[in-house]
Length: 388
Image (cartoon, rainbow, N blue to C red):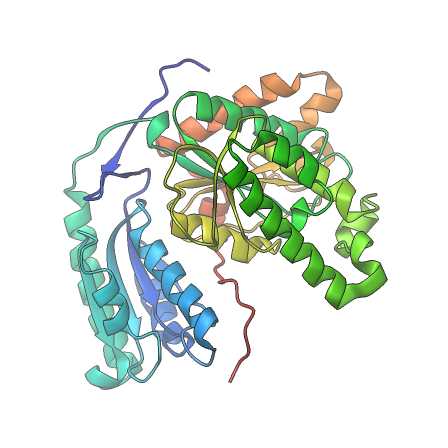
């Protein structure tokens, strides 16, 4: 990959660069999901986000929901927003709009109870979204570089080849991105259990090492509390069927996605990194919730490896799917963007890492991923507190 990693994107008011220029129609609460869905049916050009959150949870979970929804709105791939609220929820449209007052983006709100119900709300949201889409078409593009990119790293449906092909190849791509001045986010704390030692060796400082260790230890203790003697072998059924035997085996493959760059920082779920380079985020191992944390932090794209196969994408953020074996690539060609199984046929990990970085550049330049083409966006926020 040449040092000339250049693309044309959209510079936002906060200085970050978007590789997409979406109009986001976002439900602030689950009760508004039907209106958002109807607007997307009428106007597929928008990115519509419905979810099961926004009310009925305790303080810590509500705090995560507000932070994550606000982070999604602030993601640089989003150019304009319509918030759709119900009117009696905790995470209201007014609350989010106030939180985002200085985002610099066009931001409108429609509240179902205030406009006379769901049908009138859908009509009003559609009108506003059409206007915002027209405004976005006129926004000029600017030159972006690798240093403008923040890329999330995820794996799901892993198999015995994941830690030998796709994950280390992504690690090579992450190392090159960091060399070029960009940022890579290694997530999934539960999938670092049993692999803490190698990660601590990459920590840039004692402070980074201490926070990383505390996060992994906390998740391991919670796993043992819940599962007792089974904690060391907790794996998804597909992982077991694919030949993985312990969480440590899976974790050693998982952390390979981070490459060998120094870990500059450890951040909480959904928090925007303050430093460039390799960053570790404290997220669940559950793919959907992990993706949301990285997108809320500002990731413009996500490299997602899989050995079993998964079509999952994410709203407003392109998800690049990389298979660990060629059989999967051939079996799910409409869902997989790149085959790292070619390593088993003789290609080097570095070669495939360069292919991944080249594909990332093409996506930054506008090439759509399979998940974008297929409309496979899924959204959920991490939570752990009591419901009420």
